[in-house]
Image (cartoon, rainbow, N blue to C red; front, side, top):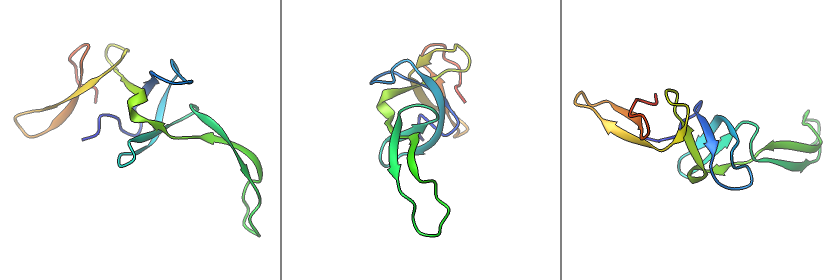
Length: 105
């Protein structure tokens, strides 16, 4: 079970983008990376490819960030904290905030 999923609100805790918050657009668990909307923007020089209608020129897009550089923002306490995964007796698993102890899901 991943601690950070698509659609979560996260805060960047390290690097040039430190302190910014955004929502997770996609997660790459095998690479341990996430793409966050509006954060870690890079410029890509792209030229037109044949007859296909592609956007040409300098394009700004989001680059992946390491999962270790982001922290999940708890919906209950509103702070960016670590989460733990707790397995309940019925077999279900939930992410638990280390600050308030409530479920982050």
